[in-house]
Length: 398
Image 1 (cartoon, rainbow, N blue to C red):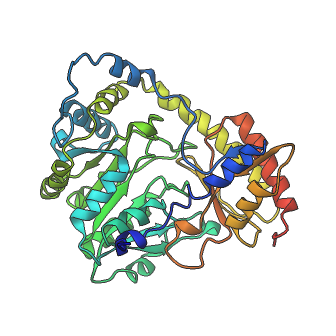
Image 2: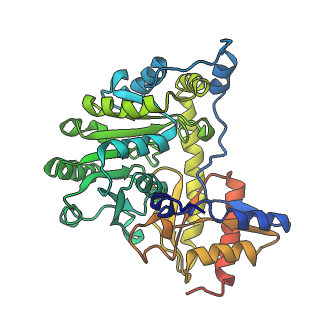
C-alpha cells in the first residue's frame, strides 16, 4: 500500500461535519435533531436566481472566461460601489465559492512553510485551506468574556514572524458574530502597512449587521488598497450555498494577474451558476431588510435564552448568524455527542459545532460551541428549551 501525502495526513476532518454520523443515528432512533451546527440558512433563495437559470437558452454549456463572466464581475463591482468601495470589474475574479477564493489566494501570497495570522476562534476551514498549501495558521486568541474583540496592538505585533505573510479577518465574524470597530480595523491596517503584510478580508456576511451598527469594510481604507484582498460569496448573502459562486477583489493589479494563473488552471467557474448569480444581484434591496429583521428576531431568541441558562458565557452577536458560547461543561464535544446519543427531551435533541477545532492554540475552546441561528423562530425556541434541559441533566456539567 502506497503512503498518502503528509499534506493530506496533516489535515483534520471538519469539526462542523465530523459529528454528522451521530445525527444520523439519532434520527434513526426516532429522535428529532435541531441542527444548529452548520451555516445553512433556511431562508429561501431569491426567485431571481431560478429565473436566470430558466432564461438560459444556449444549446451548448460552454466554458466561460477564467476570470468569470464580465456581467457577474460588473454586478460585484456595483455592490461594492454601494458601500463606498471603488473596485472595478477588472479588479475582480469569480471563484468556485469563497472557499476556492481563500485557497488560491493563499497559494499566491504564501510559500510552503509560511504563516498567516487569524483571530481565533476562526472559520475552521481556514486551517484546511492553509494545510492544503503547506501554510500554518497561527491564532490570535480572543475571548468570549470580551465579545471576541481583538487584543491590543502590541499583543498582535508579538505574533508576527519573518515568515508571516497575511492576516485573515472574517468580519462579521464566523463563528463569533463579532463586528469589528473602525478602530480595530484601523489598527490592523496600520500593522499590515508597518510589517508589509496582506490583509485577507473575508466579508461574506457583510449584509448581516444588526442593531443599526455601521459596517466598515477593510476595502474602505484607501491607504491599504494595495494589500487588502476582499473575499466574497453569494452563499450566505442570497442563501445560495450550493451555487458555489465567490470572488476575489483587490486593487493590487499584479496580485490579480498572478491569481488569474490559478484560475486559468481550473479553466472556469461553472457557467450555469454564474448566469443565476448575475440575476441574484438584481434582487430588490427589500430582500436584505426582511432577512435582517428575521435574523435579528432569531438572534434575540437564542441570546435571550442563553442569558437565562446558569453558567453560560456569551456576548450578544452583532453580525452574521452565529453565536459562540462558553458552556459549564467538561468538554463541549463530549456534551454534544451525549446529547445525540443519550439525551432527548420529549423526543427532541440538538446539534451544535464544538469550537475546539476553530482554534489553532491547543487546549483552548474545549468548553465552547457555536450555535447557528438558521432555523425559524418557533424551532429555535424549542431548541433552546432542549439545550437548557440538556445542560441541567448532563453528568459532566461543571
